[in-house]
Length: 308
Image (cartoon, rainbow, N blue to C red; front, side):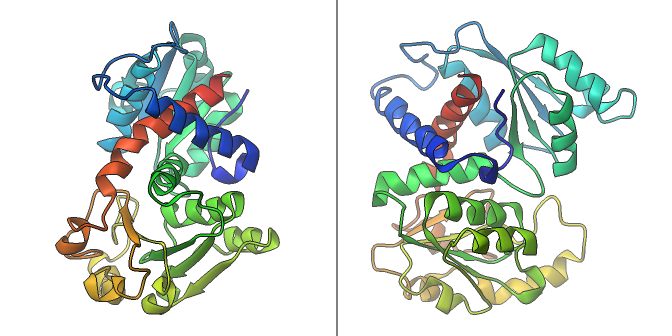
């Protein structure tokens, strides 16, 4: 049984297979209606349960469309409507019960520990739709998007600007190891990446640089990425955090230090005027809407990989 919880859990060969399958399946849909089922219907008769402990737009919609395009069906569960999460039923029992009903489970959770606990007892594949530690499905769709526009990501220069301690930054560090690209992270020391993840990356001979200087990080970059300064997981002083991060805004002045043909990525939702200016996210270098669409295609291949 194959789970998809962290990019670091999957070997490079399998991750490459997922990306290439996503490219191939997407190309075969040219001219299709958005909800039209793929011709081969690989998951005909299969079902996926989606559990959302947190609000969601892109994850909810893209996973629902993904399983349906593959010929399967989905069931959406919220903690308020089920025993799980209220203490009325253990994680172990919920995992065992749901394993009897469906073929694959996707969970979007505030706690990565919840995900790991659920995975211990699930008898069917489990996919991380987002946790406080990682956001692997988003990063896989970002790699798909990058390669559609810039070619193979190996050896390319990607820059992360902003909060280096969040789930997106951590998944990009893991991806840098597996896909062999160069990653430079610009962040305040207070919001530096997880030391264990960085140590793991260095041990695997990956070119990762962490700096407090945004200009240094984006110099010669093929792609600049950022994320909301304050996410749903943040429990500290939000105003103070924004103040600390104010010099890490992605704007036209900063982008000029990247390559002339560099692209801009953001996983959304966006804090306009905070981590990025309107003229960047709505500008010619921005590929955020293509990123959003590719959530569907990357997740289709992740689901299919889990069930193969």
